[in-house]
Amino acid sequence: MNRLAASSPGHGAPARGRPRSEAVERAIIDGVTKLLEDGVPLAELSIERIARTAGVGKAAIYRRWPGKEELFVDVVRAAEPPDPELPGTSMRDDLVALLEQLRRRGLMAQSSAILLNVYAQMKSSPKIWAAYRASVIEPRRRAQLEVLRRGRRDGELREDVDIELLNDLFIGPMLLRTIMRPGADLPEGLAEEIVDRLLEGLRPAGGDAPRR
Figure: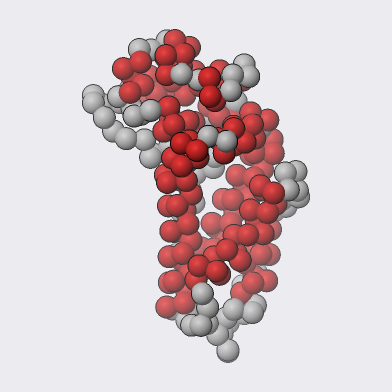
């Protein structure tokens, strides 16, 4: 089974109408996946065409998604690794978990030509990109910022750091390798390396050294 159809739809889709049927939802996600595998561009994927391919009525789709933009976001989310459960043991460990999710996402994009193509097409559609940003990117960024705020509050970071800038410094190297440099090396341990190298210069004077 293609990676785009390997897991259930993302948890951000709205609950509307009658209770969801997992079988119908799976048929819809698989229908979109089949069309993408056949090379149909996102711009040509109408709700009517998706419904016909999935063997469901258009109403079944609209009960689950208000439009195709939200449906496409869930298709992409189904292909990505799930958001991590943060250990909560330290800021360092939580940051490693967040970056590891980005690393795994990058590996999946590298190994799936369809997923890489969907990302590229999604960015060319302002409505789809806005829906993805609102339901996926922004919640992840808020989680990252909260980890850093907690670390500063708990004395794991210097108090004079700019949290917004610091988040970009942590996330930037992984995004560079996963988005700006397709095919770049994403070895195991990369998340730990990024976090530990940055924390060496960001801990309060006398703070504990990073754990390895």
